[in-house]
Length: 439
Image 1 (cartoon, rainbow, N blue to C red):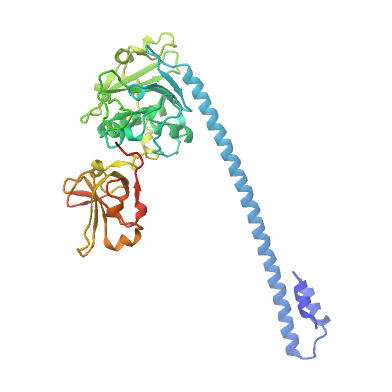
Image 2 (image 1 turned 180 degrees about the vertical axis):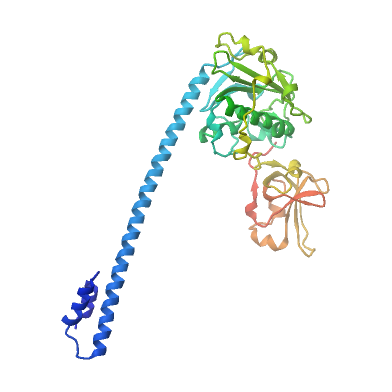
């Protein structure tokens, strides 16, 4: 009997075929053999039928998943084209409102902003951008990719100019205003858009003002924003770094709604101090007053601009009941926290950076702890990285030897131990060597 060939040649079979097959086979005249073969043929038919069905279903799934992937790629392409067109439109609009300065400074144009760069002070004189209503639904997160602006011909400031200076890298055009465009948001981290601000101004007061303006966008639609520091010759400088960035005493922000026949505007100036408070009424100024301080003519191409430059009234600006603050939050930069500020980040997962001025491997203790003291020697060190003896197996080097004297960062959760902030490191991957060392 050639049963193997029979079974393997059959993929599916009907009940009639199954019945006929039993009687057509020339089998020994024994009941048990007939029954055994009958069930064998039935099982083969059933198994092959179901296998064929499952195989067909899998193929259909793959076909549909492939179609979905193609459609998603096409959708992404369309969304990218829409974003590029919106950026092109905004850039064209911005070209109509470029301010005029009594001095000639380099004008830099990016996807979502235009700025005037001041080489002497290594920061912008002004940065101009438009906040569209797309900011309400935008979900692009901040990148923290602070970097040199390749478009500044003389070279912009860089990370080492701000490192451990006590000043935040304050965005003039905030990254959150570009949360609808990945490209524009990324470009907001160029140092040409950055000015030194105290932590109190940048993280609280300035951030609150930026949030308020985005809430006005909900109510009024697209708004034109001009932001900058008040620069003059005798400003103090950040001491380290090769560029010697000036430290402004004042920062201004101008908000204009240009959609109506008679534009309306509001402007603010805040002091760049540690004790600055958020008070819009007390910080309210006219555009004329900012022009007098900076020597910049902000709207030279708008007829009758003096009508809105000479007034600034908060009552003209009401807040929408829908708050932009309810959208996904933008957090403070946790990637490069100076060691001296570590105490402000207890409980946060972040990257603490500083100089490993002193190290000690206490091999005689039960826990065999390794201490990495940042910036100052014990007990004055503002922050310490701790490695327990049981975790040294996860290091390919002796941390107390290799890390000592280097500018380093350690990533982890900041804990408070005996009144001092620390991070417990369990693996060498938590440490990185900071590339921008101060001289």
